[in-house]
Each structure stands twice: as structure tokens, then as C-alpha cells.
Length: 580
Image (cartoon, rainbow, N blue to C red; front, side):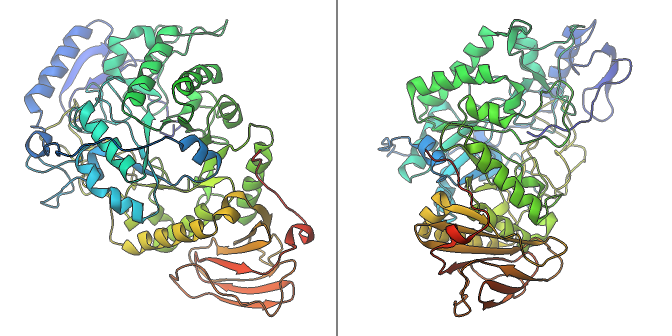
């Protein structure tokens, strides 16, 4: 969940609660909690529940949930996800359980009462498909029960949990989730579960001992997300005394994940809690499973920091507290990163690695569920460009979001329309933003009409495996001298034990780019055989001594193996990740 900088408070801190988010209103005065009245709290809660009960659809899962298979033997599995992060061996796929294998039979993009939404059990059907794409780790977005009050969308945001310690019944039982994890492990897939940073209004009302309030006694709310409330990590902020009930609540979540044999946790908006809080939680988890991995959603700098009620991003501090990997800032490529800025950012992280314990890493966060579909940044060609970069940059673990593999644009025909029925008090088909994957409604399975993206993913996974030592352990040599005045050619070397990979890419999605790239040790006789699967417009290359002439097609990405065994000595700049 990336936080925007738009505040929902009005100047009088008074609002009118829209029980159905369209026309029916309750005129009692409300405070900023949107569902927590100043004088009529019990009335509003009961009225909202009455509306929900009157219009709540029959859960499709009750009709379609498959019976447990007879063979549910536990997998022979030993968690090593933390080591995999340390060695840059993780390839993640972010999936939304309730839509991951949804069956939209009538094509209206919504899962109606007679249709099957995603569940823990039917998700198993797609494990082999993900394996073929090179995925080895599921990032499972939150799977807890979802709040009903002041909700977003007709099913509620998956990041507005009503409880951390149980599972959303729509998805299945705890035993069903254990079955999913076990089947993943049988096929060599890790499972990392999302830990939300905030909670629903429902849980805010039930557990005031966990919640943050301001000096007026009003709930603290991250800007732009009025459906959630923030935790209070300190019981005494001035004295830096941690909130013990909140710590215990999170430890119980860790216990639940360990009971289900989960391999790690992805911490949503990790900066929402201080490093000392995470140090205690991570140490607790590692005392029970030393290989239990932690991924922090934190950025080098947030786009809109500082944000109301939210601390600055501080990845180095969180990595030092025990996180194994973090999100980084690669999602800025289509927005502001030109070639030089991208290369400088890579070097910034490599330098940071020497100030931290060995093996800290990033994910290739070119597009997450918080970002617009990469199809909007340049179609299939841009998707393939980011896949190539994510698989070859140093200190980086590839990362994909559900639907990416076939080019989902995340444009929904129902967006903004009124609903006849709802699982929440919201009767509008809200979506996070235009061209963002829907995490608010029971929607179709994410996917588009471009399976060639998935084929390119598979080919890059195979290339990464073939040159695993070069890519995961090798030096990083930026090739800055490209004779490209507009800074569109991304070019770098990965080198390990005498073996060299040359990467050349065009970040420009609309036109060809020509350049002259200086490469120490390159010979005119060097064969230039592209190791990547072709796509888009054709590129051409001519090798000369010390120079490569390139004419790059729009958003084209290329990898060559070249014979430059001494390039670490000959290059002006040579960088490497601290691996211990």
C-alpha cells in the first residue's frame, strides 16, 4: 500500500457518513473516523449493519468450494527463504487470493453469486502455471477477514482487516490455507504472506488499546485512506516505550503464519512502525524459524513524503533491524528515471549494502499493486523491458504483480458504478485508481491478451538460471559513455570469474535510439548473438574494438555474452554488492 498525500479531513472535522456511498445518508455529526460518531455511535453501527445484512449477497464460495482431496500428505520442506533473499535467488509474484483463480463465466468482470471467486483451494490449480514463468515465491496479499464499516468497494480493501488472527471465511478455513501452503511446498514454491500496516474501522472500534489517536482523541488515518486506522506502536512515544498489546498481537500473527508453515512476511508500509518494533518482531520470528524472511514495503524516498501521520521512508534503518529485502524505487522508471538516474540508483543501493549486514537486497519493483499497469507505460515492449532489467540488475530479486504475465491493463467496465448488493457498507464499485489492479471488489481473474509477456518472463528466468553466478554474485559495471544526448540508452556489464554479460536497453518506448557504447576490451571480431527472446521492432549492432554501435528498437532489451575477461581491471567504475 503506497500512501498518497491527499488528506480527507475537512476544515471543521465534521462530515456526513455515506452509508451506501451514493445517496442514503445519516445526518448525525461524525468525526474523522468515518463510522465513529460523536454522539450516535451505536446507532450508526447498528444502522450500517442493518444495511449490510439487507443487501449482502450470498457468498459464491458456499456453492463452489471444492472438497478436500484425499491425498494431503505434508510436503518434505525446509524453509530457506531468508538465504534465498541473501543470495538474490527469489522471484516473487504478488497475488490477490480472492481473484487469483476467479471464474467469471458471464464476462461482466465481477464474480456473481453463481460464479466462483478465488479461494485457498482453487489457487492450487495455478501453481504449475506460475512455476513455468520462473516464479518461486508467492507474495500473498492480505487474507484476513475484511472490515465492513467505511469500506472501499463492495468487498472491502484487503488492506483493511477486521482481525489479524483469523482467515477470511470467503477464502476458506485455516486448514484450507495450510493445504495451499503445503501444495506450494510440494512444488518448490515459497509462500510469503502480507502483514497489513493498518486496520479497518471495525477493528479500531473493537481494540482501542492498539490504536493511535491524536491530541484530540481522534483516530490517526493515513492520508487518502479513510477506510483504515493506524496502530500506536508506542504506549509512551516520548520515552520510546513500545505498545506491548500491539507487540503481542503481531507475535500472534507470526505464530499463526508459522503454524501454517509460511516462509516469510511482507510488511505493508513498514515505516509505519519504528525499527525497534520490527527488531522485536523479527527476532521473535527468527527464534522459532531462523530462515523466516521479512520483506519491507519501504522506498528510498516516498513520492510525497512527508505524509500526514506517516514517518519518512528509512530503508537502511529497517534493513539494519532485520528485514532481508525492501521495495526500492524502480517504479519511478516510467515517471522520472532516465538512464543515468537508474544507474546511479543501482550504485546507491550497492554502496548502502556495505553499511549493512551481508546480503541485503531489493525487489524489482517496477510495478506493484500500488502502481498503474505497466501496459500504460508502453505496452508489451515496456513490460518486457522491465522484466529484462529486473532479471539482470545486481542486488535485485525479480517481482511481478498478478496479471502482468499477460498484460492486464486493470481497466474495469464496472468502475465507479453503483452496486445492487455489497458485502460492506459501500455500494459503489470503487477501485484504488484508474489502471490499478482491483483490491476492493470480487472481480475477475487478473489477466490480459498478451501471453507473449509470459513467454518473455520464462525466457528471462531461464537466462537468469543459466548465468546465475554472474547475475547474483557478479560485479556491476555501468557503461555511461553511450553518445546518447537524451540519456535513453541503459547499458551495463555483469561480470563474474571471467564471464561477462553485456546488457543494452532502450528506455524510450516510442522511438528507436542510436548510440555508440564504449566497452573496455571489446573486439571487432566479437560475435553479437542476442541471448534474449526477440520482440517489437528490430535492433542492430556492430562491434568495433572498444566500441559497440547500436540502433535500438523502442523499449528493446538485449543481453550478450562477450569475451572480456579483464574488464574488472579495465573499466573506470566497478561495483559489487556486499555478500560477506
